[in-house]
Image 1: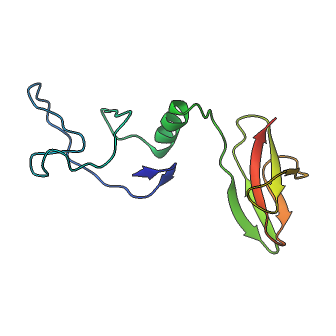
Image 2: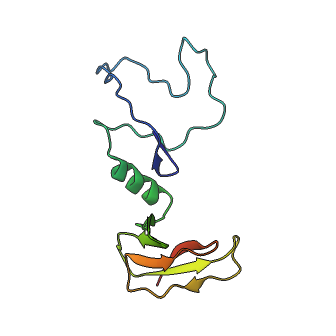
Length: 129
């Protein structure tokens, strides 16, 4: 299960048998009643095999016109924060001390990984150049 681009859980299900006369129900079944789903389902897709997390993320990015935006990964090293990302394009790392930010300040770095001092609150983003 993927929620907002993050893997929450995995499970294996029994594949559906091929039966051209079988009905497919999304959000309902005979045992649940006709309308157990509260809300709307959109962009339902059926695949012949399980998709990888990266394939699902690519599908979602394409559906919402997000392109291949990188994800910032974080780690700590002594009193520093190490920010890294896979750079599919030309990105500028920026920081702000509060959110919502009225302005963002470029972080002096030579790309990924960037090592910044861990002092106070800082929020980071990547902006396409």
